Length: 144
Image (cartoon, rainbow, N blue to C red; front, side):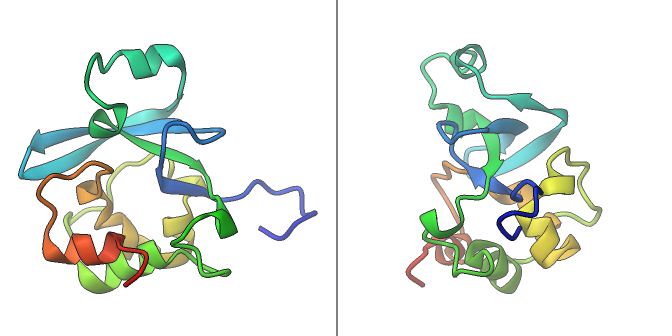
């Protein structure tokens, strides 16, 4: 959003838990070689207690985080849009036939930028993926 409009910036659905304003909006499930995000009914603010629920496991392996878009502070941002969202839509097939129920969508940068096409790929986007497809790896690489 333009500065001075009073509107909040869009949320990045690929955020890190330490980012200011971070929320949990999904839980990673599925198999190690085929992770899948299950969406929460509402956003959960990131607190030390929420992060502690993962025990010895990195919270980024368990949760999907959203946070206000970092804009120029992110290597995926080109000054106008999120290249990660664009590349996911261009390089990866839809992972879902139906629009996933997502509490982040009303504020999501990917939704605003790419619409339904981004949402249809979102369930397979996880922060820690030990076996990403070549397409996911290329999409996630900010230098490609």
